[in-house]
Structure formats: C-alpha cells, structure tokens
Amino acid sequence: MTEIVDEIFRRFDERGAQSYGEGVTELQHALQCAMFASRAAEPREIVAACLLHDYGHLLHDLGEDIAERGLDARHEELGAQRLTQWFPAEIVEPIRLHVQAKRYLCLRRTAYFNGLSDASRLSLQLQGGVMTEGEALDFETDPYSNAAIRVRLYDDAGKVPDLATPGLESFRELLESLIRP
Image (cartoon, one colour):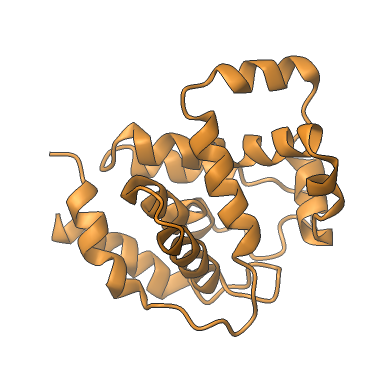
C-alpha cells in the first residue's frame, strides 16, 4: 500500500508544480479541493476523489497549455484508468465523471455556468460543451453522478492563490486506508 501512495506522491512531486491555469499549481489545486471536502465532513472516498480528481493531468506529456492549443487530454479518463487498479469505484468513478458533472451543472444551473472562469469555459468547449437534455438524463441515472457533482463543486472552489493547506503527506493515511486489497 505504501508503494502505491509513494508512486502517486512521486507524480505530484514531479509534476505538481505545473500551472493549473487558475493562479494555482496542480498540487495546490488538489490539496485545496481535498481540504474543502474534508472540512465539509465529506466521506473519506469523496475527500480522496477530490485529492486525485486531476491526477490524469500529471500523467500526460502534452504540456500545461493544452486547452489554449485546442487539445483535450481527457485527463479524467486517463487518471481513472490508472487509479482503478488501486482504488474502489467510490473514488474512481467520481473522478471519471467530474468533467461530465461540469457539463451537467452548466445545463441545470445557470448561475454555475455564468460563474465559470475563462479557463473553465475554454475547457468546457473542448470537453463537449453544455450537456444536452438527453445526456443529462443519462448522467442522472449513473450511481456516481451525485458524488461526481460534489467533487466538481470542490474542484471549482480549489482555485485560491496562496491559500494555506495541509501538505500532501497529511493525506497518506487516508489514501492507504482506501486501497483495494
């Protein structure tokens, strides 16, 4: 178990300093999301999903400016594919669905769409745009859609420059406790 978390943390050490595009780094973003979920007394699976939801960005070699170049790395799929070998669906599926949750929230909540940052609007277009009603109805039937929406909302909150957070090591025990046997 320790080796798995070591590997995840190594990725954060190697690539976590790359820009997230919102005035924070990938690592700062992950830590903020997990901290907010923890403070809200979310289940530990949601806290872990918040910490790891953008893990896929640490796995590709497409650079930090991919959205500006019109590319979608499908980081949610990339991260979920890697993490599924170690973690249960209660963590991996909200990660896989967090981009779809953004598309869904843009359809269902006008204020949500209006509050998106420029960077998030750009990535939204690359990720398929606002969901159609049919897509939304399908999304609502997914057993992990509500968890994905919660992860998405913490994702949106985790963009505060220079916010103090617990360090990555403070989440080691949590992640190790959630690794599948």
